[in-house]
Length: 430
Image 1: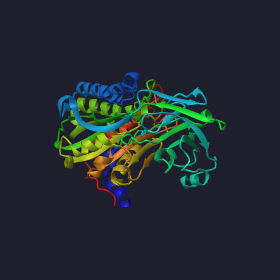
Image 2: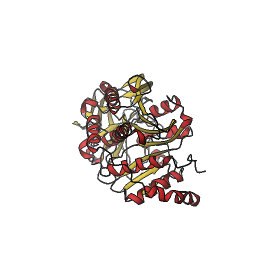
Image 3: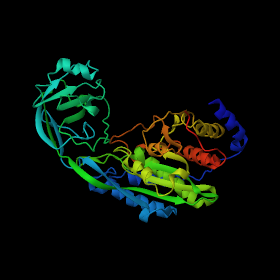
Image 4: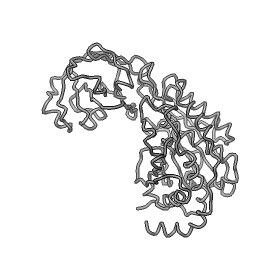
């Protein structure tokens, strides 16, 4: 790391003399987030082709921005299999109907199910899956559902061997995931708010309809601004636009922070470089992928089937959940590419963008990963702040997203890109 900062200090005067461009458009970003998180997008997943509606909208925005398309309508088609819950979703606890998304969520791998269960309660003190077998006879659970305390880690997400039906109680807001929706199973699993499941509850009834969609079409989008100096080298901006969709007919997950915010930031950068072509030293590529929530499927497909030579890519910046910033900015993979992080840090100190810049280690938790695995230097940016901490829940709405430090995010990114031409190819820290 010491050598990194010695090298950065050589560039320090030049960097400190730069003033990153301030051409961001907050009104435009807010408009895009409002559109993507609206009910008509249905949570940007399979229900009523919400993700396809979003793709068409984003395609039009790319065209309006003036991007050149790699393919017709900017779209790259691929397919994946997904288990969906957009029909009947009815859960009754001792005769009281619960609200999906608010009171409970169901496992993404559940098959259709219509059944009543007698509840079997485990002690609240349990924290280990192996302790479950001390209190429950897994050979005698037919027609019964095990109530597992929140402290037993990964019980809901990974299941408990020998337990065909379970509830895990949770304090606070519900959050959902769909990363295992390709795997439909016969087991029943729910998370339910603790306050909605009193200790004296005896029965629960489920009437849930799921549908496994085989090889469903999905779309990535990409366009570019041709480089003014080195057009055969590529700077890539990426974000995922998909989200969780619906749970039943009435409940949808808006996904304003995750990740309408990142998608809007990529489009805003596209508009900036399309308008200021002299700033595009390299060819600037703008990629919006789907299938992230189901396991980075879109970005993985794009990295495997790039419309340009990926070995010519200089750097990838991935934006995922960038609507806050009061507490700072995180740079995932910052420790892997210390020279890149040091440049971000110099820009941040000079311009007082964020109160804290945090370097994260190697991680494959977002859409930078497939590019990184292909050998392209890549980081993932997300903002931090208590002003919005909604994640994978029904409260992640446009009205809850303040974009506290959007101008700062735009400034540090464009400043980084301006200086990229003066840097060597970033190497992975071993």
